[in-house]
Every structure is written in structure tokens, then in C-alpha cells.
Length: 402
Image (cartoon, rainbow, N blue to C red; front, side, top):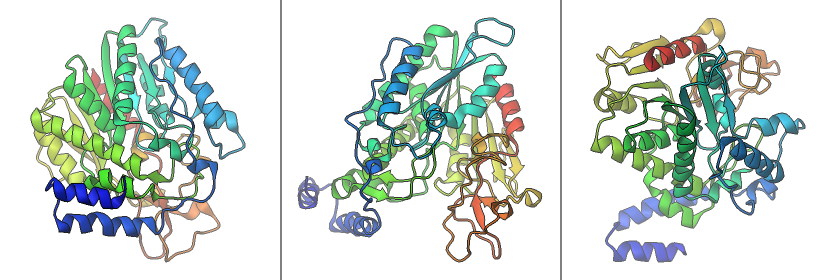
């Protein structure tokens, strides 16, 4: 459909005014000026998305591995490690004392991310007797262009199917999600009372983007919203307009569910006060009002006490100069300091942080860490990619899930 037809239909249905049309077109034109990808397989779609309704989790992992191995555009020389970090996985098939687990958790990653985002948390929970699984959302694991292939139904159906597979194995099921994945699992749990509780890490329920509602129109005007160098083996750096619309669908869905009815089962929810893509205070208010279980906990990372009188909210100091940390980022809560990729001595350093007035130092050990876009005179800040309070987070998960 051409832009002119969209505007015509919008006018005909009285769904938007002339002002709204300008709001659509002006940002889109600006976006397009920096969102034309280079000629590369990264920005050319695979034939389809892999199947996701296998009869068992083992079959799901095997078929997904084959698909990703065939269609992924690899960005490192270590293809086996890169492949392993972009496919579903399972930990805790037996408990530490040799028994079959009776409790399970399914983790759902965020937009552009990978199942491996939950490697550290899943490992800890498996050691505590859980069957922990991390799935791959359709469109992920291969190349950024493939996020334009799946529909929202593909995402919700994939989550539902993996929940059903887990329910065959254990008596008690929890769901965990990061960012977009947090939206998907919250919506699912809102409709399914048999889900025991939620683990939400920087859930994308309230984005800090007033133009997000335009994505259903923008996707017809431009293919790409952002194109960046693809140098991260576990996360797409570029974003298509169709992928943005998928995220918008998760936001609308989860907000509708929470507006309709409070969530009354236990929840662990984490949020950095300096999250650069979400609205932290709005998320905090939603926790106070819509997540009503007295066992629930909100972990707030900030250099000042959380603006809340709710005794379920705990603040952890995010300004740690002795560790060269200024603030916490959107993704940092998930990872142990010992993580081999994102940890203190990890192989990947997230140097891109929106800074233009200071040069990247040659010695990367001297850079400070923060949320995206944070600046301080005389200091180069990269993205914080680990959680100094990781062990405390695991303890909080244990307290709430017990």
C-alpha cells in the first residue's frame, strides 16, 4: 500500500486528522534519511521463519539449531559458540539431588535479543531445582531482516506452545521475560490462571516513546527505522519498522490486560531508574497498583531511594564509582559479572553509547559503564552489561518463588 493510499484511507475513516498525518510523515522522512541498509545478507530476508510447534522441546531445539545454522549470517569466526548462543536451550533436566524437577520456568527474550540472555539466571535456577528453558522468538537468531517476517500471532502462538510443552513436564510453571518478552509472558499469564507467577526484567510495558503508536503506518512507508553495524553476536543492532510494530503490539496487548484486571500472582520486577528506552516511574506506579500480590517484589536500581511508599519495593544503589559504574542500563540486570560475553571480563564490550564529544580510549578497561546516552565530562561511558547485584537478584527470585 502506498503512503498516499494510507493517508486517503485514514481521512476516509476519520481515524486521524491532518495534524496526525504530518506526525506520521515528518518523523518517517527523518527516520528514512539514516535507515537505508548497505548491500548485505544481513538485510535480506530468509525464506521463512523456522517451525516452532514441535512435539517436544528436544525436537524444537534440534530443528531450530538446524534452521539457524543454515540461515544465520555469522559475524564471528567461532560459529559453534555463536550458534549455541542464538538457539533455545534447557537446563535442569534433573535436580541436583538426581530427581525430576517439579517446577519449571520458561524465559522469553527481548526484541532483537537471543535465548542466551537468560543463560546466567537459568543456570542458577536449575541449580536450585528448576527445569529452566529459554525459547527463541520467531524472526530471531538469524539476521535482522528476518524480524520483518513473523506476525504477532507467530510470537504469541510460539510462547503458548512452549508453555504447553513445559506443563507436560512439571507441576508448577513460572514465566520470565526481558523487555518485549516481559510483555508477552505477562499477557499470557493474565489469560491463564494456572501460571504461578512472573519474573520480569526491564519489562517493556511502558515505553519512553510517544510515537510508537505510529509504527503500524510507518511500516508501509519505510522498511528500516535504524541501521547499525552488526557486531554483537547475541543481539541485532538494526531495527526494521515491522519489528517496531511487533513491539507496539506487545505493549498494547499487555497494557489492555493490566487495565482490565490487576495481576494477583507473585511477581519479581526489576527496573533501572535510568532505563533509556522505557518509562521507569510509570512502570513503578503500575507495579504498585496493578501487581497486587503481597509477595511480589520490585527491584529499583538508582542512586536515590525509589519514589514509592510500597514496602515491596527495594532500592539498590546504581552509582558505583569504585567499579566505574555511573548508572544501570536496560539490559544489565540479567547478566552475572562472570558472564563470558557481557561480564566484567567478557569478550564483548558495548562501547556504542550515543557519545560524540569524546573519543573512545584505546584502553577499554578505562571506560565507565552506564545506561545508553549517559554522559559525564571527561569520562567515556560504554553500556553496562552486567549486574553487580546478580547474586542478590537470585536471592530475591528464590524468596518470591518459594
